[in-house]
Length: 430
Image (cartoon, rainbow, N blue to C red; front, side):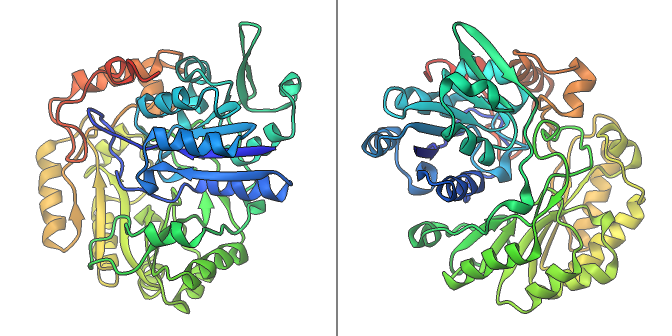
C-alpha cells in the first residue's frame, strides 16, 4: 500500500485558536510513516505548513504519488492536539482538494477523537480515527474496506450508516521508534518553540519523552486522547536526540503534556550539547531536580499554574497540594538556573481579579514571566465542557465556540480580536 500523510497549510484568520502559529514537526505523521514503512508499505509525508505550499501544490504532489490512502490531520501537531483550532476549515478544504486524488481519505486528530460522527460528516472523508493514529493507520493499510469492522477506534460510513467502533485509541508508546527526519525538514525548522532567552541559532526540533497526563485541567482537551501517562524508553529517546544533534539541531522542545523529573534523562542531557524547553507542573518538582533541570540545558519552562488562588485552581479542576506561596517559591527557584520561566494563567471563572493581578506583578518583579490571564476555551471532551453541557454530541464544537465568543469581550494576544462564528469559518471550506 502507498500512504500519503498530509499536514495541510494552516490558516488561523478569524479563529479563537490559542496555540503557536509557527510550523512544528508533525510527530504523529512521523511515527505513522516509520511504522508504515516497517510494515512494508510506502509512505510519503507532505508537510504543507512547514514547506509553505498551498493546497494546489499538495494536490499535485499527492496525485503524483498515487496513494491508496491519504491521512489528513485536523490539528497542526501532537503538540497542539489538546488545544486545537476549534474549526475544521483547513482540513475540510484539504479533504475537498484531495478527494479523487488521494485514494481512501482518513482524518486523524482531536476533533474526530471527541466527535467522530460530526467530523466524518463535516470533512466528507471515508474514515475518522479516534485517538492516537499511528498504529491505526498501519491497520487500515493492511485491511480492505469490507473488513473495517475488525479495526478498533475508527468511524466510517457504509451503506448510508455511520459506524463508530470503540473509544479513543492509545498507542504503545514504548514500541514507537526513534524518529528520523530528512535533512531538508530539519534545515527549514528554524523556529525555537517558546524560547525567549536568546536569538535562536541553528535548527530546532520537537520530541516527546512521555505521552499523556493524569491530571484533569478544566479546559484541556485530552480526555479523549493522550490521557494516560506513558513513557518512552530512555534509550529510544536518546537515540532520536542523538540523530537530531548529528543533523545540526541545537534546540529541542519536549512536547510532553507533563515533563517529568527524570534523573536519568536529565543526567544524559547534561552530557550533550543541546538546550531545550519543557512544560511541567512546578509542584511536582523538588528544588534539587529543578537545579538539575537547569544544568541539563533547560532554557524555557511553561508552568501550568492556571490561577493565583486555591479557589481559582479549584474552579479550573486544577488539583494542587501546594499553596500559592509554595508555588511562587518554586518558580523563583527555577528561575535561578533556567533563563525563562513562565507561569501560565487562565481566567478561573471565580476568584479575585485583583488578587490575580497582584500576584502576576509580584512574579514579574521576581523575574518570572506571568501572562495576562486568558479565557479558557471549553473544549469538547474537557471537564469544563462536561460540567456545563455533559458528554459532547455532534454539535459540541459549535456550542462551545458560540458560548466562548459570547462570554468574552477580550481575547488573548494570539487570538483574533474579532473571531468569526464557527459555522462562518467552516462555510465554503468543502
